[in-house]
Image 1 (cartoon, rainbow, N blue to C red):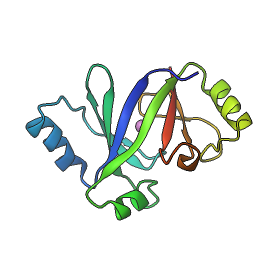
Image 2: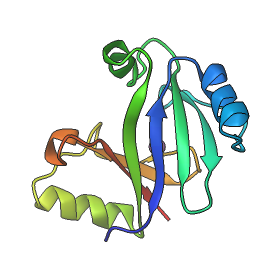
Image 3: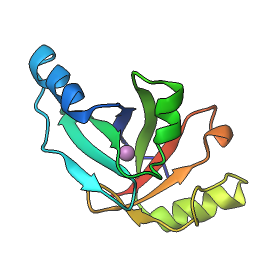
Length: 134
Ligand code: CO
């Protein structure tokens, strides 16, 4: 069921400052910012060839990463995203196994225009997992 690591996401308080660090200090190619109101975040991606880094900044008052940044004001690793071939089959299997799906349990369209789901970190060793259908 589980495929490749699609990206590792890092929550940041200031997307412009974080982009500058990756571009100027680390010499990375960073995409232009993308606003995802449905997910309550603005994002940029850094393509590393074998995987990507996603930098996330809160967007709007109900951003799901606001509490995370209140706890870790300078930012921190927020989630890992694994690829799956069939997101509904993956969800149904995980539900049968007793894992909790965040939100209403239905996939939303993520930053790459593909369906995504988030899994409860307490069911996965304290790691927030995003699944993205390929
Ligand atoms: Co993500």
